Image (cartoon, rainbow, N blue to C red; front, side):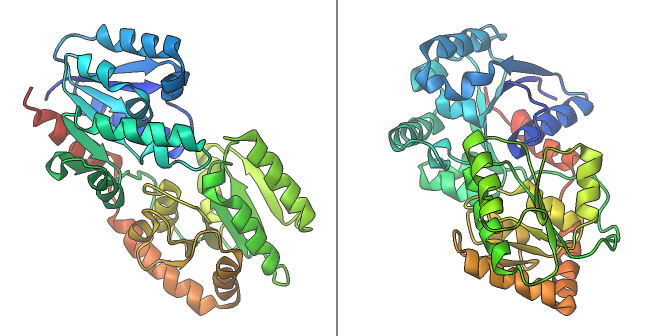
Length: 347
């Protein structure tokens, strides 16, 4: 098995989809006996496009690696690196991409254009590209990446699947960073539309953007949903698993997903899902979800109302969800996909 280095910015144990993916991939590659050097880049490496000092630090760190050692490079860093710096690395680079950073919600327009142009240029410098979904593969092909050099390595899930749900009442669960892209504001407005029904809701996720967190708390108060909608923050793995088992409906009003790991976990728990027809979501949830257009609280509320009022509708989607969840890969499968990419590198 070919050894490699895996460069990840900041604390790779952060509980966000991208970091969970890279941490588990790193652990599983190492568990197979492959020599994988974890390269901890500075936390700000993802924004190094605007910081000459950070760019220099990233470049110096990567240039100390043994010549020719393949490098798996986190997508945030890949998008932020200047093409000339990437070209100087004397090693094959495997770009680990979740979605184009220039398409991220909330990025200033000028920076978004710059990031998209730079990442597009960098695609030609990657020996191989690994992405987390077929949708993301098509996105990068649209940006000019060679289809023959793109491998899809779906995220894994190692927890139990299809366990019976606990009877905890009509609880709605949403899991996602408190960031604008996750659409929690849309969910909260949709919940206000079904306030005549019995339910309680938990939004689980760490604060990514303090302004967004403040806006969500203010919106809950404005709509009179205090006591019914809880911003639960970040939970431990065990507490999060309990949250899934105690839920009756999973709801994520996301504006875009490159895959949607929380959605996949909802499938593994056999939950009926309400989400949005955005990005990779339709491909991830298949026929186990009711999908609204993004940024449409009324359409989202109509789907919530249907599932809250109809046990038959919930049961039908739950059955489909369990079936899809059973078919999803485990992390060893994800690592096997990456291992084949590494072992197939020509240089």
